[in-house]
Image (cartoon, rainbow, N blue to C red; front, side):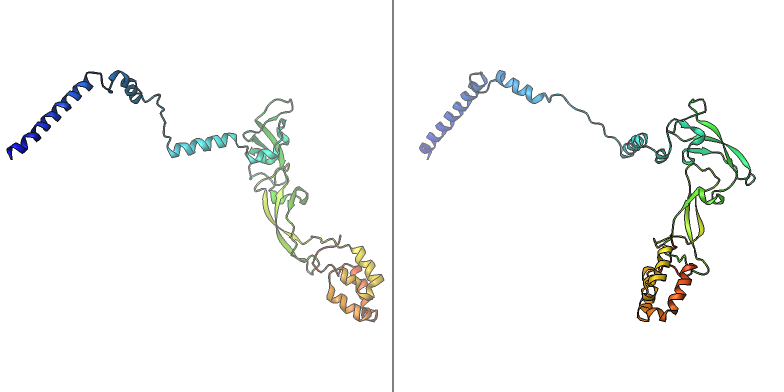
Length: 261
């Protein structure tokens, strides 16, 4: 047993000696590991290059900055109605702000101090830039203006030919260059006065010439009465004469309730 273990010990000692010699060879610089050649690599690894810094902006500050930029570049909607470098006294009401007084006497002339809105440019009588000026107007509310000073929406659902005449609620807006007190948009009760394109002269001519065949009723959109006149030959002429009188005085009108033109 001792004779068999002796060769194994010799091999172990020999391998240790060879390992020690190889390490010395590498450290001496003759091996493949060269520190001079490896130094640039080490420097390249250690040098991260130019660095960039990023600042994190809070969400609230970002939104505030965006809204400020938007407001600075956005054109106010009233600027579409405001002429540039015109007389301040002739600017539309949407372009100025006036210190009005509702305690004035109705129907009497009054003067109010006014200021143009931001981004609006105007001049005085001497063509000099002006911001503050005085405007002359009549003391009255907007809903008290004459009908020519405002525009109202039309209704196509009410009957214009009715007894008594029907009315409807309309939304009215004051014209741009008219100045008044109170709201410039207001509701008002108006008579039905819309038209569907029917002519009174055409209806009367058809009633006189072809009324016996119901042509006048067909033209006005009253097809049931037209069929009745057609198959009764105008009610043996009696119905025809009656329709001539009714259309002539305007009592019979279009079936949709509109007015003649």
